[in-house]
Length: 152
Image 1: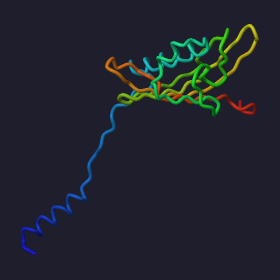
Image 2: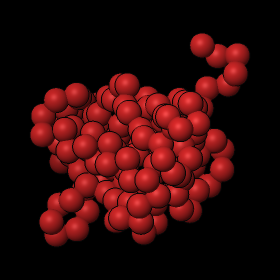
Image 3: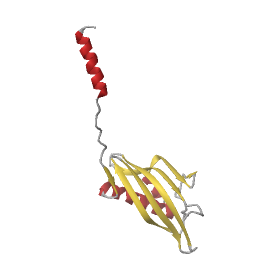
């Protein structure tokens, strides 16, 4: 093998042994305007869902998948434990994480119906994405469930 080709072979072997440091993009958790925006989007989605308001449809992408208590939900009520009517929703905890154009939110909520003296609790995970020319956040996936009777 000519000397020139052996140098190339050595360089190729050395190049394959090198490492490269990859820095993750900046992640913003519970803070920053992006996190505030997606938390507000989730609050609005829960509120409109409890009211049975069709404007809630505009918060989701056309291909969004919504699951509540292990069932696909195509219309309100989308979230587990919520019944359409005179009830209202409060959020007891929300943790939003934003990375680039994608965000995910873990939210604990409670639905109250004072007339029936009834309350239900639920937890949801939502994945949001910035879509469209206006860079609006949209919900692309929502999964909610209620605790089992024996869970605290």
